[in-house]
Image: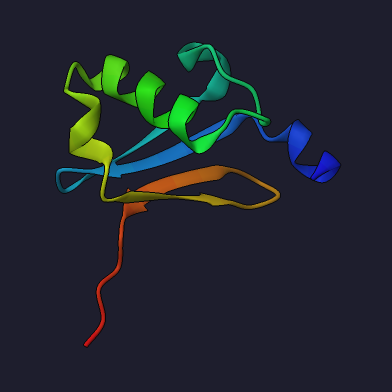
Length: 73
């Protein structure tokens, strides 16, 4: 997990739009938990944190991605 500590960007997909945010703007770093990320995003979006409950947090070397859960079938 040490590789991900250099992650500085978060990509958000919410309500049909995409947004790219610096983690520092949200008061986060690359080691933030999923719950911390969702809480910070809810505050940023001025929504109840429950509205992000169905979103997943995907961590890559370049970014943290928060997006709706993909449903197949």
